[in-house]
Length: 145
Image (cartoon, rainbow, N blue to C red; front, side):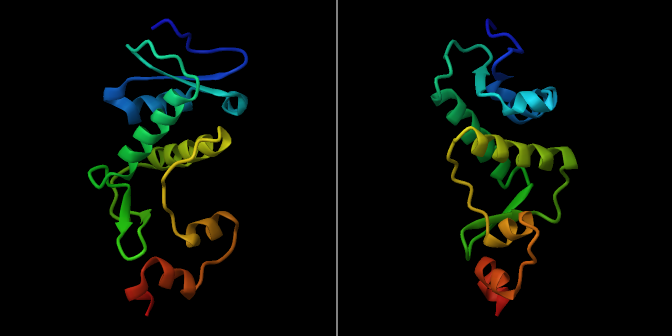
């Protein structure tokens, strides 16, 4: 791979498509905190594409799709509200959930829009607000009744 693993003015993630989640976790965790605030560049190992924004967006889309997959087991799809919620029976460790949060945060910070439908209750929790019965009704209408 011709792209260096570090750079003074950007945050570089080098990942393999075949090991996307594992490589992303490793690459993100090796970054210094200050480097995560630099412009992000993604390089798929073994590919020549230069990240002018399209590779970065593809990286986030592929990674989020894999993390949302029922096979992965971290999240469950709430069919009544078309949103995702944390799977209480997931066997994934804290580091995988940390990756999910970091990935979503990096996407927002780098202005990459993702289709990742989350219920309002989660945003309230992030803001330190207590979700209420109305939030349950929005997320799971049948249970909320």
